[in-house]
Amino acid sequence: MRESINISLPSKPEYVSIARLTASFVANQMGFDIETIEDIKLAVGEACNNAILHSGSEETYKLEFINHSDSLIIEVVDHGKGFSVDNVKAPNAEDLQENGLGLFIMKSLMDTVEIESNEGSGTKIIMSKIVE
Amino acid sequence: MFMKKKQAIITENGSRENAFIALSTKELFYLYKNNREIAIRNELIKRHMYITEILAKKYINKGIEYEDIYQVASLGLIYAIERYDVDRGFEFSSFATPTIIGEIKKYFRDKGWSVRVPRRIQELSKKINQAKSKLQQDLQRIPKVSDIAEYLNVTEEEVIEAMEASQVYTPKSLDLTYDASGDDKDIQLQDIIGRDDKYFDIIENRDFINMCLKKLNEIEIKIVNDRFFENKTQIQVADELNVSQMTVSRMEKKIIKKFRKELMKLNEI
Image (cartoon, rainbow over all chains, first blue to last red):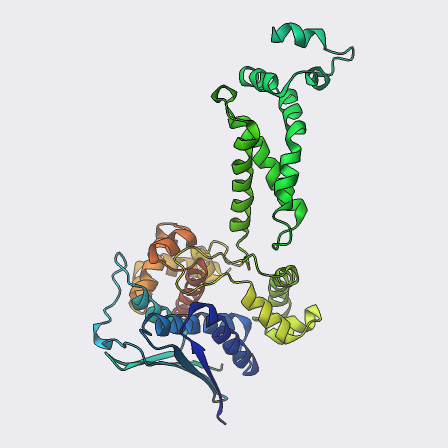
């Protein structure tokens, strides 16, 4: 089974709540418990932050929530500045940059996180949470 | 001259407060400066309560009950009376007003609510948190939204919305956001091992900890170090990492889960 929900949001912080709420609803449909839902919301929030911070002149970014019945897959896509994935070093805890930390947070909270990005062409973050 | 007047008007039953009624406010402040008697302060408070009422009313319907704001404002009035220096020549009301407003604003901030969150959602959010702990106990597992909705007799949608609305969260905010859900109790090393004492020895074992640390990323290691070994609060750690307290809380829980996993593996040996 593959059910997909797509939303397109303005690249502004005040709309991130919509992404988080959508994530909550989909995750709830799939039977995740409330703690897991909170984790997913936080990870989605971080991914949205990323999209917004790197948006440059792009006014919108997109999210897709996919119910694969045994797992929830979330894709966050922006066509902003992008960044070189290799240059994301392990964060030096004493000297942090916002987006570097966001990726690590996502990796802590979700089961898998993949990032495709290239400077100048935008970023795609794909994360998943497996139904236990 | 003050003393004569005071003695002249002490009433028969010796009620101290009545003694001060005849004095002017300025005289009272002078008196209070040299003699910090509660009765004097009470009279000063009485005379200036109107300021408290006026200011408290300005903050109605912003998500906090009037009674609470009034209390906080009254405290502000007391602070103002304590700190006011009558010799400086300023009018007390012009001194008291910013002091009281400051206390009210601080209270709003500390409560952590977005001032646009409707009261209904705040109350539901509190009930949800209570339901969370109770259901976890009863069901012996983490509750689902459906469990909570059924328990509270509300819709699942309402539960989900309240959970979202209860977070004062803006992505670019470098300020602290408060987890109003109240589940950020200080996590001790004990929480990793639950109530089973026999694992104490294993946990104390440096090798075990080192092995677990190998499976964590740099941020997780920092959190383990700061929270469990340096005993910093979540807020301190959040400050240093430039994230919300909520984020630190969630990551801690994940880390503990990972530790538990390792423990269970050991147990299987």
